[in-house]
Length: 527
Image (tube, rainbow, N blue to C red):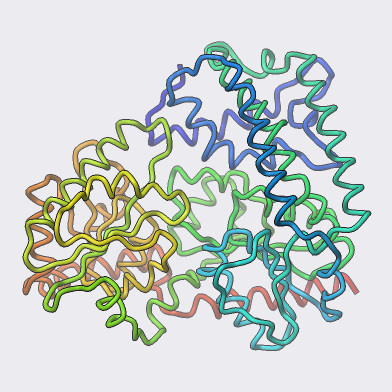
């Protein structure tokens, strides 16, 4: 079987996806060519999502026995989504009516977190300049956003761009998708796609293809119809996104190339050796955190001339904003007077990584035990915002003292700026804590790999056992904290220079300038 070492698994899956996509089938086409609907290469569209979220489960999970329930699962998922859309999606043309007459930048805000942390600062900067209008496209109304209609900019829901033409395009794509599914099934395509030992995965891959054709792709095709409509009818001058892997954003990149509308991706998460989504990059330009990210992207095949090192808007406010919420955090969590605040950014675990999860929960338990024994700190636990797996760690915390839980949807930047020390098992927010100049703790138990890049920097405190966690928490919450920070400062500065262009608070300005230049060129080409 394929080596499932976690350091290389994602890379091997990404290569396999490309190999499978180029495999010839009995119809004289490749798998990728066969899975092309209305000119949209659906296989390539889905590669990042398959590589990051779906296929690791196939390679790492125990083989699941075929069952009626397993075969029906995609139908249930599709029915649930259809019912949700029926009751919540208000279809109409309001978005078309309200689209600005002036040149407009289209910002893809499908992920509320990515929008609020990375895209909104850029949107507000562009709006305040008055040089262009912005439309932020979403598929659910944001619970909280500071962006209001400024100089004609606004937020549109995808369903506000739904007319007879869009519906017809959608139905045409659904019909072609059914034909593709039937053709692949009649050819027994997987028997040609999977090679040698990969054939041991045939039942699991059949389940993946059922999920693709019955549930996932039908869910996504309305976004394809809307993307085509918006770009062809409204002709924005530029597409701006912060997520390279989301299939919804990839529709816009693909149709943008068809209609000669350029795109820029603003990096959101860390670029690491296993960040295989960059292998499938479609954007015309990429705004990268720093030189380290640029190097990783180039290794994955993104042309160097497309990448500009800008820093990240998500980091600007960590060094620019006047922070006045510390007292609110103390009140909100009832922090005892004199207690230091230690913030723990809890991780999530991809199903199948059972040993990784076991070790991660062991580190978490040791951390909670050390906090319980301390007399001078409060541990604020912030669950992961997207894949909330808080129940397990709440159970581990039990009735231990000095532990409180933040809402998984809370803005972690406010908590980072309020804390005295920060601990993570491997998260982009570790970088945020270093930028905010907090004592940063990155556990490295034997077998744990999530913090490698931070450990190698020499800029963090590195406990390797339960005893060392307790000792480091004692330092981080006591009078030795300032001395420790001073000792780590040279390494911290070197690390930030390499990873985030010094985090100087000017990333939003740099990206806005790139967008203005791209917009001007695009407007000339469209005129």
